[in-house]
Length: 110
Image (cartoon, rainbow, N blue to C red):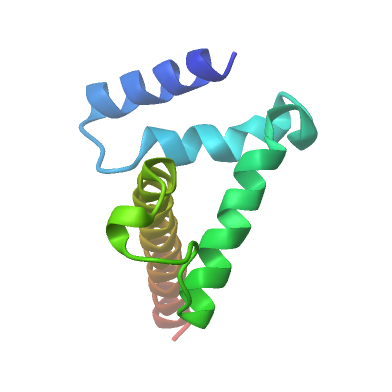
């Protein structure tokens, strides 16, 4: 089901030449099709918590050097960093659209 949602969103973006992100759109559609606890993985949620905690407090997730850090955590780190960037970028775009719409509404009411 999730794969179908993603494929549909990706096809729409491809056909329209949109600059959006089908992954983000799929994520936002999921609650309409299933309960969050069906798709959320406890281990992944713990990794996300660890990532955010480490970013916020500027501490290492694991003791030691880069070479001593588990390869799995390094991969998770970069995956989450990219996902957080996409989320922040999407949020910025949405806020900009909302601000433009409000400005246009104010200009229209003059």
